[in-house]
Image (cartoon, rainbow, N blue to C red; front, side, top):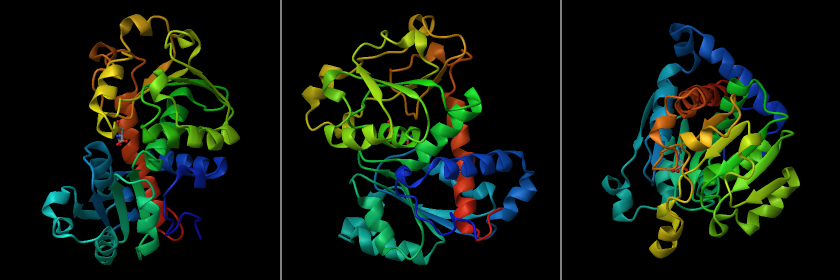
Length: 309
Ligand code: NCD
């Protein structure tokens, strides 16, 4: 049996290096298959999505991923039009949706929401973002992008810049990178450093250097992972205004970077990567978004097929 069959995907911490490599190899395979072959992988299977927070890429990439492998999707992306408005609980909504589907994808503002959903669901649950805690499929997509574009992960110098306090993609990426031998620089305003409650966990997996100055290590980086300041998670608008626009990656900064360095961003972007970077060979965030479709199709294919594909 394939080890991912019927598996919940709640945290990237549950994946070791060998398992990640299996997913990457299967993703390489899915990218090479003919459309007609791909559509056999999960023919007739249904994915249900339940999004309590806004999303463009994550939801649509799950939609297109299940279609790519022959399945279909249904779900709720606008919670104001669902029975949640009448007071239906998350547990009941999840139970009902798992009746209509083979796999469930949940995005929710609370930490722990996906783990809770997995406990009450009769079908596997994929965490598509739980509060400020984690976004494991984004990390798989990010790691796949690094591996694809740099041909390796071990040995790289990786800078992560922006909102390290509230950005859930950062936590999943750091836990995922903990499987590799990498040098990590964390660059943020003082008030947006990674949360002290997670530092212990992250330090068990990798060592990192913190800085407030993006130029300090810029010429040494192989990968610069830029994140959006998560305005909606700030308890106080004043605090947001203090850090808004702290780092803007523009051509002047790119000039200081290695010729073959890459710039990633989970998107959506506001002003933290200027649009004139888009046409440079270093910008890989749109490729990263495209790989998200294939890595998610792979995960779904593995979760839904006992013997893999
Ligand atoms: C991220 C998220 O929702 O955490 N978006 C995404 O899924 N690509 C990042 C963000 O919102 O800034």
